[in-house]
Length: 327
Image 1: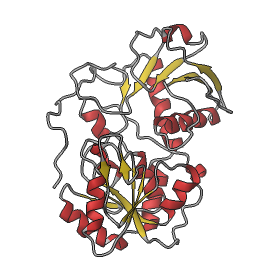
Image 2 (image 1 turned 45 degrees about the vertical axis):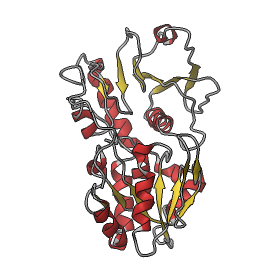
Image 3 (image 1 turned 120 degrees about the vertical axis):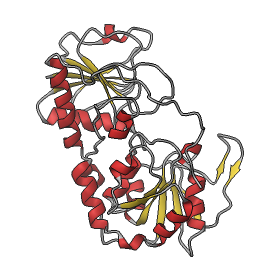
Image 4 (image 1 turned 90 degrees about the vertical axis):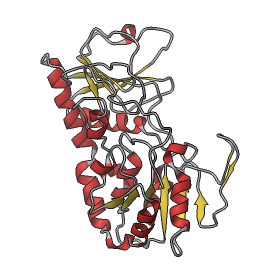
């Protein structure tokens, strides 16, 4: 099968990345399975297992699709009609009444359900690139992983949880102590260390020595690569029960609550969770081979003339409050 993967970003991922990391591993798994992979992405991209075409944003995408492509896999919503068989993976949230393409794929069951749809594929990563988790490594702190400047991610809540424990500490991966991007924010807590945007082996090394991920998001998280990366390294997850989190974090690998008091208690009992179980859960359920297999089923369904959803997905209930409940 000739598969074109389209995204408005560069590949491979340079630092942390999100969608870029997912589409890289998806294409690599599909290539391993014998499929021909072409990427249509931003200039300066490169790939050693597939062909790369540079996206020209001044031209319609339909004019940039090679003639021999069997199916086009978008990772953003195209603004034009594509004549060839295609599907769209929606990686983020939106809060409007727009109907989406009937072949929209979401990244979790909850993500799909909120749009009245059933078609989803969990993201997966190639754990071979992450190295061994070292489940016997000493662990002396917790971590937050995400864009700390984004209030929905609630880094303030994560630090507050740690400050209310007896003596725990937290390392913030994805933020600075002084943040001027969204007004003046300076974190006073002496129990929080800040490491900026980290990726690659530096991030992996920090996760190997963490007692757990603190993830009290105040929105419906569509998926959360930070969650599965943390679990892979043996870190239980302590977060809010919103969006995909109940799917990704069953009770034996973490604790979910919108009540910070309950999360403080859970964090102080983090030692009861098995690093081995956390690792096994992520490695088995959220790997790139499983993701690619699920997408192949979607491709085949479309090529056989069937839609992925029974009706065009549309957000069932628009959110009126800025943040989901957190106390």
